[in-house]
Length: 324
Image 1 (cartoon, rainbow, N blue to C red):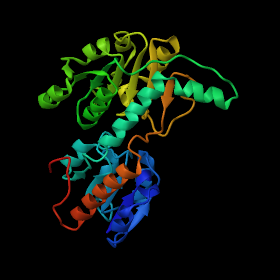
Image 2 (spheres, one colour; image 1 turned 180 degrees about the vertical axis):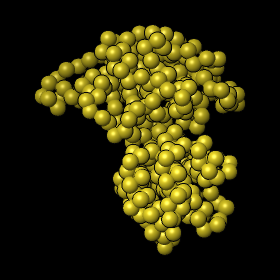
Image 3 (cartoon, helix red, strand yellow; image 1 turned 60 degrees about the vertical axis):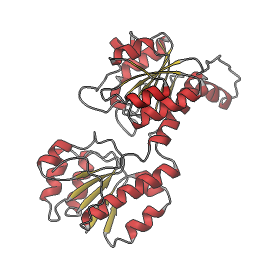
Image 4 (cartoon, rainbow, N blue to C red; image 1 turned 30 degrees about the vertical axis):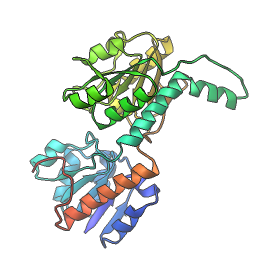
């Protein structure tokens, strides 16, 4: 059996997942993702296919899937290291009877912590102050407390809920929008429901994005919707970069319409330079490391490894995202 391993946090972080994968006896081909279509096709051709993909955010579109299925060693399973499936053509995989596995419930704590960290950093102007001090300057800009501010959460799934509980601990007042409303959680944490995302934009002082990346949510935060927001609003994105129109956000940050944009994700990763976010003091970007803690990586890597090995060994203990 041959597996293609592309996720870098899996490879770069020590833990028992390495021992588990090594003990499988499978051949493991390693690459440094996220890989575009061309690199995926090249690896499939060079190695005459793989039994399984253990991947991060590589481009696994219909063309890649078809090439992998047609290879001398045809693809049997895609095992996503993580929960976001927007880089995989799941519909095409399902049509081809190709299982897609994933790892829900392993990284919501650490991503929520990262979101709160970005909120604090934007509210207190960390980037501006750190840059000034490193340049030998002593610039000081007055910031804001999180306490008493209205926190608007778009998407009250696992991560959104964790952000709410932490925001409440800071004294924030939570609002949320979600199609699948958890009334019990909302009552427990005094979360006020809003029927539309636009209502959240109008009322919140801090907005945290936790929506899935779909064609419907692509560019959701754009110039038109930014005009609905309060002046000085802070927007946090630990979900997907495609949720925002980056040019519109950059313009709003420069004009002062938004007080800060803290993001762990970009529309294209790694960053393509020059980028509109570079050198804007009230935009803070981290390189998609929200789930990259030793604790989270170990949980995520172990689940992803168990998924792919159990599937290939005929064990039913795996978590499948599609039905086929």
